[in-house]
Every structure is written in structure tokens, then in C-alpha cells.
Image (cartoon, rainbow, N blue to C red; front, side, top):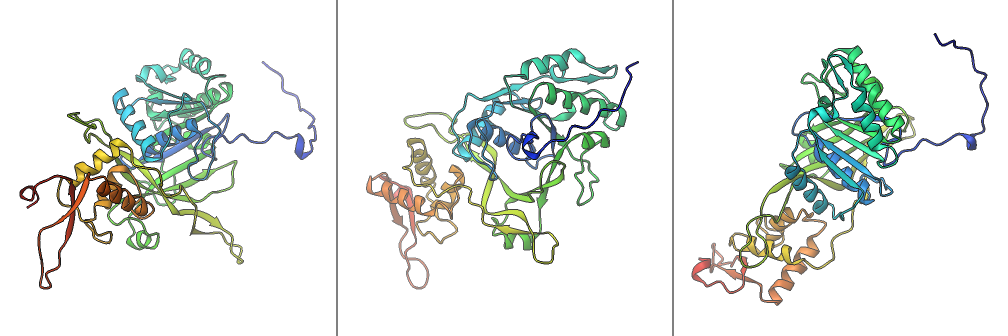
Length: 397
């Protein structure tokens, strides 16, 4: 039995104390375990995939500027083809570039199952540490439940699993981020992580995804009506000041992986992405009363687009114009720019000038043209539409 004796404390000046190593905001801290919690279908994986691409590529997300981190995404839910779709969509949605720092494996449960009915699987734990140390900075495991085969509600067993992940983070010299499901009976204000409390206790940081249904909130924040909006709420933050909440929208990005005829590839799969709102990150504000409240502040996400449309993007625009449904008027609900923005994952307000200029350029290049169906209404107004250039009048009627 090891004897324990009191150790005299060595006093240090501030500059002698090592700073905590946050790799990309409080959700990713070296040597620690953190959690993303939420119900199914609310974007947990989509968020973490986007962050993985962000950290590997070194581009800012939610105001955090990572330094080209080596990221390992372990997915036990999606296969390789689906991960390819989701990563491609995330890169396209946020104009990210391909980075060699991103590592992705779609694994069987047995490959990352660090605990079973008979206790911890030391061989798997050691394999993970050896694979990570010196090679990986951030490990994202999706989902946590696939890393063990013990009862979710057994506090002592889940405690061992959580401590094993902390050991992997510490000895592997990396940040470990676990994606976890939410309990069905979650009360407002709690993280709602499913199962035993030991996992929540072990995590140094927890964020919870909450749907935004309140019509007044949606209107106040100028969010897209009818969209699926999500608030990312910090529900536990041990080592970092509270940052508040971020509001995102679950959108889609259209991949150009459809069949190819003569010309650019056609529109293919629609893949879920997160859309950031430049004006609506919620951060703590300290008023004179001393009580902390939360308010919406302007946080720029990206500048408006100014680069020319790529060849495949032109193909998408012409495909949509061929539907003969979309109008030329910017303030019309059926303006071509709205559906093009959705297909290219642009912001129809932020990128409105780019859309208008692109359509004008295509008209001048005789790839796109305007047409109308003759006088309509009491005043004989002519409603103009777009169509690919060269279509006959009969095709447009």
C-alpha cells in the first residue's frame, strides 16, 4: 500500500503558472473532456463536423481562430460515403479549403469500445493513446454511447468510462469531445445529458442544443421564418468564462454529384449544414445593475461574396432558371436569387449584390435571358422571369 504524506505547497508568481490550453474556444481544451448534448435531428453531428473542418483548415467559427489543428473524427453512426457528403457540404457552406490535418474514420463499436460488462478494455485504451499522442490535437467521438457496453444509468460504471476518456485526453495530449444524446424528459435550463450523472461531472465543458420555436425571438433576431433554428447553450463551463449562446439555422447544401450529361454535373444530394447568422450571436453583457443578461450583438461571420461564379455554380443557376418559375424582381418571393442562394448556401440578403451582378453577367454573356408572359392584371403589368438563353417562346408558355 502506497503511503501518502502531505506535500508543502510551492508558491508561484502568475507568470510561472502555465496557461490553460484552449485549442478552439472552451469546447476544445487540451487534456480535458467536453460534451455536445442534444436530441436527435438537431444538428449535433453537423455542428461537430463543421468545427472539425474549421479547426483542421484554420478558419474562424463563432469567433474562435484555431491554428490548423490535427483533428480526428471518429464516427460510429455514418459510413464513409455519408461522411464524404457531410464534409463536402460543410466545406462548401463555409468556403473552407481541403486540409491534410483532417482525419476521419468510420468505425465499428468494437474499435472504440473502451469498456464492457467485464470492465475497462485496457488494450483499446492503449491503442487509442498510441494512435493519438504526438499526431492528433483534437479527437471528436460520435456518439459517446458507442464507446462502451455498460448500463447508461450505472453511475459507477459510467464514471470509469468517463475517467478512461480523461486519461486518453491527458496521456494522448489532446482534447476529447464526445457527442451525446439528450434525455427525453429534459427540463429547461439543464444540459439534459442522457444516463448517469458521472459523465456530466467528468466533463469540464458541456453545451446543449436547444430548438428555437418562439415566434417573437425569431422575429426579434431577424431569423428566416419557417427555418429550423437552434440555440447552442453553455450549460457547464468550469475553466472558462461563460460565452453565452450562439444561434444557428439548420440548412442544406446541394452537392453537384448528380448524373453528368453534356456539361457540368447536375444537382445531386441535399446535405444538412449549419448556417451562421452574422448579427445574432448571444453574449453576456454586464449592465450597470450588476446582473448579467444576454443580448444580441453584431458579430461578423464573413464578408459578402465578391468572386465570380464558378462553372458548376453557373450550371446550377441555369438549371434552376430552366424551371421557368423564378422572377427577376429582387423584392419578389419568387426571385431567382432566393432559390440560387439556397442551392449555393449563400445569404440572400448578405450576398444580394453578388446574385444580382451574377445574373446581369450571365444575361450579357447570353447564357440567361429575361422573358414575360404578356400583360397581366388590371393594369397590364408585365411580370418578368428568367430562363436559359435560346429557349423558344413555346417552351416558356
